[in-house]
Image (tube, rainbow, N blue to C red):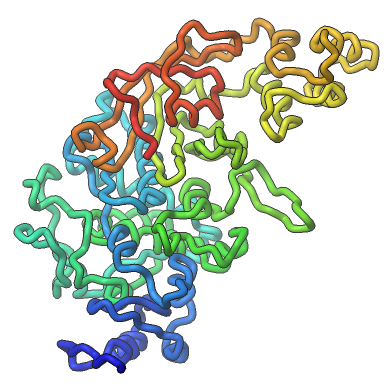
Length: 504
């Protein structure tokens, strides 16, 4: 027996209310859940909807089999960009999922604080400095995503009179009939006034999309000014999603679809709520490609897009240590010594101020990279038949007689393989990479529950990048270390805390 429809305060059904809203210049989804928990299917509204707006929601959230997006997953994405009370330059993540946006923003934020800011105390920032740093970082990512400056930049904000208002007493959000409130004089507000992670239940998927407005600016200077004026929007309820939508519309729906390998895969997983690699790459490089290798590759007649230039901040993943993928040099060797670290379910950030880590490639580092390009399965060796090709690629003497002599030296037991270590010792025995013996490093994890005493703070440590000979120091085998070993095979880490930082 069909159930009666619940009563609605407006006197309209969800479909009728959505039809009314669809006629406005707002972003509206194809299918969603109402505040009452009823799935709303909106394909009948095609004639009234902006095709672009429907495409945005399909691209980000996909088309779940149930016709709508899980309320719990959407809720996890409704936080803003909130600075930690314990670490003034660190952003806080409240639940799993939005790290796909927060971690890249944190990485660029650190780049700007560590290398573009004059203050020597990079861990301390006033409220005004936080505002400037965050907004310049968001502007930088938007500029990177813009395919053509002539098309301008898109900013997705709340429709006039519809910005959420945070109650300082109930710690929930309601829809206010006023615009953003004036900025407090200091970012160190009482705890109950800090922007919160989650929206109230009444700001569900449908309602969120019904109160959005998009605006376009045509110059970089206008973009930076507008982003700065929207500081409280980015910090408040749904600030992460508003920024994500801004990046997507700035990049262009069609441009993203042309770069994504599987256009049926949404940027946010509808089951688990995690961001895709395409989403991470879009924020890090400005291109929503699905792969992490350098350049494009052909596979069964299909062109698979990879990374095409050196990134400003890097990316390393635990998945490479498990042989699921291979990160290319453009992400492994970025312009600045900051790397987003990926686990199976989460993103964190590893960083240092040691610029020698991202200096020009030394001959031995080039040799290692070239050797490994002939070892796609990362076995640590190549068949001896490929030795001549490796030597030619490195412009080493490659006369057949000399190659045969090298083979007998590097493979004295005639096993038919050439190991990486002996190869490097033979041709690059005294190479100095220019990296100091030890240097301070830091790890950031935005999730409270992943930090000691549930306080989001950087974990400090010391790194030792040793040669391929047996290192004198052996530290614990942790996921963070295994992830970093995909770039520095013989790195050792000594953390100042009792426990190693968590990748998850």
